[in-house]
Image (cartoon, rainbow, N blue to C red; front, side, top):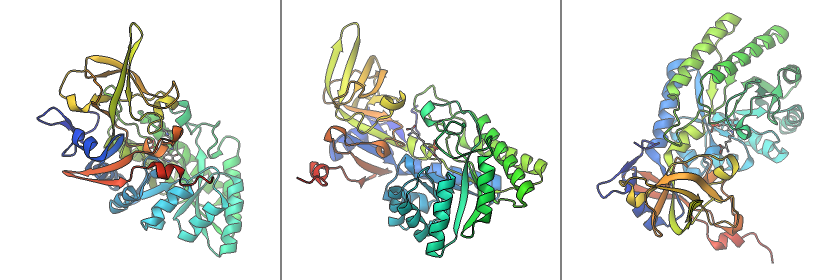
Length: 433
Ligand code: LLP
């Protein structure tokens, strides 16, 4: 009925997440409030894990892309489920380290890692640094020499795939700040150089073609392109790389008309292409890594707001204002991302109001969505925006000095705070008079 399995309606007509009434959660923990369902997160981790085991027979790893939603509790859940972790900054790495995330299962990404970040990664023994460019390669080799370590790396490759998604989240094409291009010979040059460096061990290749992708074909195509490059490397250098990281990007259902493919089908189809292409190219099947972020965290989360002012502009539109907005969810302002919204205390009623949901920031573009169908709203109602588990908390800001909401994790009937609500004291904490 809803975009996520963890959501339902209880006998008194309130929206539930797990076994909890969302109206009660809003009363208990305050609004705005992010709520995540632990079972939904764990089930997604497990289904990815099972698929990779099934199709690659123990020669595969699912690494959760923590940029989607990163905090200590999330890293712990992911570690308990046996997944690896994709981190892209010192802050994400620090969070992982603070819960002793297994270092060997961490992939460290980023197009401009600092010396401090690389040092931290080497010290912690991060399993794989995904090197983006030649500058980083040189810096990393020097650092590894000075620290007496050998760095295991992959190269981030732009496979030249045009995935059909929003421009800002497309990354596989040649005009991208990420990675090394195949067409220009830059990627091959980097591989040859890496093989000569004393403190670098090149273990594989990585690509990520974009995010919120619904088609299987671009993923299959990317796998083919990457394997052809592996074969070329073997031919030109005699080295057969052992690992292939195919990134994340699997689309989720934000609104009823979104129709994502079952993740198991992505995995199955891509694994068939991997095996067939390896056979054709006379390569051993590499160890395959995938990095889903949105599809693990996204469907597990909702955001609860309190409805405030309602402004009806006859013949134009009706604004329903909530006590959050672009500071906790900037995705409509950035990408015009669509969401489904529900009046949580009227969840069983028909949706017969078409509204623009506005936030409380001093900015006209501070909207959660336009032309949204919701139940008849009144001040004081609890509004739920669905499928906000990914790229909401992680992209939130303190614009207008708005404190970040708390995150509550629901497990059946249990609900616990996993990230505390910021206070005004937090807001001024680093100010110096
Ligand atoms: N691996 C790499 C190297 C990535 O860059 C990303 C996402 C992922 C994995 C995970 O992709 P996912 O499975 O979550 O689609 N802020 C944007 C999304 C940016 C994605 C950046 N990289 C949004 O809100 O839609």
